Length: 319
Image (cartoon, rainbow, N blue to C red; front, side, top):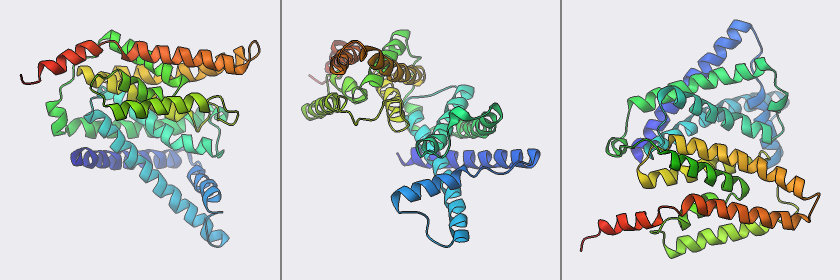
């Protein structure tokens, strides 16, 4: 694990340096003002947590700038470690695709909190705004991917992955849709589909699903597509797909992509269903039907292969 973290920190440091260089070259080339979004994010977050950044007006501005820059460095290092861990766990994208995926993850980690805090609204950005944000993050992704590819860990050398079969990608997409409907199924589905899972693990998964089934009916539960809820569902869809892939020794790149896309479809599709059905039947009836569909999809995605997995485990047990 130490090698994974160290490599991730190194990759994140290189990527962050490249991102900052490309950003400042853009400022130099176009003569535009540097973005103040990191400063505003710090101000909004500090206002919610502690009432604001301390100091006089000038001192507060300087501290927000420093904290914004440090936050950007922390995000770059953190994404580097997460991508390194994912690669070690068997999610291995080819070079160009990995650069795009990593850059998109870093962009989401940066812009997501800003949108959640109301500092910015990406829906109002111009094409130039999108390009100004996407290009440095793509450069970050390319740099991180280059370091990770050049420095394989001992675990990766031992754990050779085969291409993911189409049926596994399809099951990952189905599990992603289920996760978009009920996020706890990202954990519970693979647990109940694993014959080696212990009783305590199963009970914990059952409790999580039961709790969400109840919480989903409460009026104060935030919308699944909100900035607070959607990222967890997308991460859950990807993580659940990676777990399915790891059981068969398959490369998790395609399954994880399918799982995340499925979670997007399940989140927005489920919300659309509830809005459509609520005009025709009581909302609790629409919610119960959605519960049944999500549970059924998770079972369809995770239960196939249980017998084969059990036989495979028994075959390696000494007689």
